[in-house]
Amino acid sequence: MSATEKATSVISDLIEINNDRTAGFEKAIADIKDENIDLKDLFESYAQQSRKNTQELSAIVGSAPHLETETSVSGTLHRAWIDVKSIFGGDDRASILSEAERGEDAIKKAYQDALSEELGYDAQQIISSQAQGINAAHDHIKALRDAAKA
Image (cartoon, rainbow, N blue to C red; front, side, top):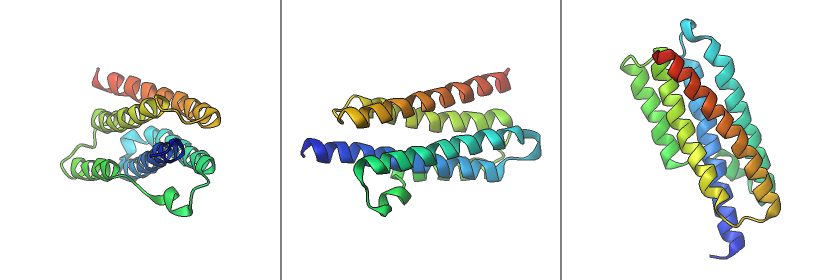
């Protein structure tokens, strides 16, 4: 695999996990009850963050439109787990935030892995900047989860 193909593959994976994240937050928003209404705005902002990330990443690879709508197998499993949790009463604040943190762990790791690759200066800069936003979101969700468990 050439360096360009490898970089395109890594960036495509980031596009997919950002799409997964958007879909996961949208699913959580739809399932949130009134007592956790404050999480809707937060989750919408993180879904918007991933939509923006996807646009920036797509511009890097000059991708075909199909890349912007693909989701990964692990992301599909993540959304299915949210569905199961909502069916079995996992709608309390700590459960919602624990699941959100689990998803944030996955995207955080994907960005860490991507940053360990040789992607070229421009791609590296964009991905590094996005990773900072992802890490901040992760840390915020983790802090909210810890507070909910207290």
